[in-house]
Length: 238
Image 1 (tube, rainbow, N blue to C red):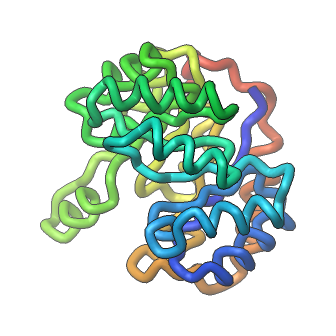
Image 2 (tube, rainbow, N blue to C red):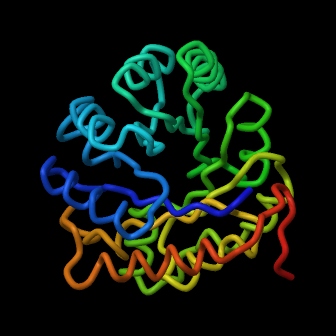
Image 3 (cartoon, one colour):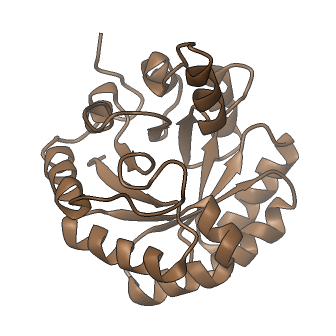
């Protein structure tokens, strides 16, 4: 799989999200994510607006589905999403219903392993339940509080190679990575490079970060797109 760059629009203002998305596409970003804050603030209207403006761009709806999976997937698919996110901590039946609805309505499923008892076995379970992608995710709140306590929080890189080798579907790593670390995730066999807070989005305010964000995104896209094909299920970093 050729590596792709995904921008997480973890914003609450719809016009700001639209403008940031347009900037990202100019910079070469491949996929747009309607982040959880945007969906909470703007609902399905945000997805419809992004789809209307970017008819050919894959759009991820980060609903973090925990229940009502079939209905929420149907609602999101009809709004124009390409992929929905379901949490691995949900009941397995919820994941199954998300997958079924996704097949019925022509979208794909990203299974998020955040806070699952074991990230590797959790990723395997998500694949077995029919997810198309695995999000290997270290949560924001846990990272923030541990840093405030002077503790070293885990990063997605700690077990990324193990997750990649455990599944045969594409993996993305999310949670506290630097620009350099995010760019390097294809070296681990994880071709889906996610850029969000705090790299392009202010971590504490749900606003687009200051500075030359378009230039930064263009740099990231050039670096990521320069990778060759990533063999799924095969980490390459020792």
